[in-house]
Image (cartoon, rainbow, N blue to C red):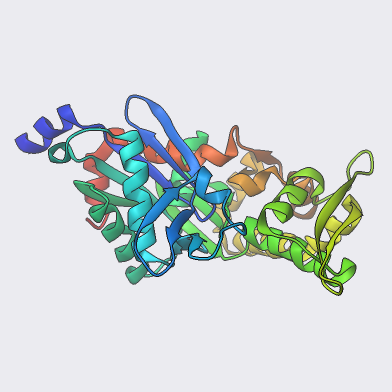
Length: 341
């Protein structure tokens, strides 16, 4: 214990939101110090990493022969162990430029419901990246803490965290998760739905960046006050040449209907399975949305209309999970009792 205290005086502990789309790092005493895409650019056939994060994302779909841009996480869990470890190591170096003997203690947000094997992969990646101690914290609980919900009180709070790879719905009371459900439908599925719509309706092939830009610009769950359109350029499926078409928010809303409906079903299922006493709390407190997907235009209004509950979008929804892990750094003794070290 004395050694832990001494090392803690010389190291800065980290809270990490290891997301499918983006990785965010919170440093104790400094706040959020890193927010970059979860992408690694490597030389094909080797373990040589060229770059990670924002620069690597710019290479997606544009790499020449011999190079490849990889997303190490899929659906919220590690799909490529070596790439995830090297990405974490690179991000850690960016944020924690100290000697190896003062390795940080780390809390990593993980999706609820992942397997022991998936937990072990995340823990091992953080270990190999230089962590002294690793604790895992379920993302819905971290998001609720980061959003400022009264998680320690004997009252029910529901949070819907819509990330890149997963949507997680949880009911929380007394600092614990009473009910949770994780579905592997979120921001990435929305991007894919847009790309498939463009291919099917316009015979146009577009990449991840373009689909994401369309979602951000004119994607919605309910109609805008004024109709919106935007030009989209890609490759013609038939002729194989560049082609540009103008699309409307109406057709993109139709393209997003399946993933949005899946999220709505998950919320309704959670409400059906919530204990009656906590249901009364939810009727009073409503539901909080977090994660980047919460920014989809009109999603809060759609959920409010379907559930007849008050729906709020958290302040800075994309950073709720990492802010929650950051707050948990102040209570590592509790994490030691709760987490599987």
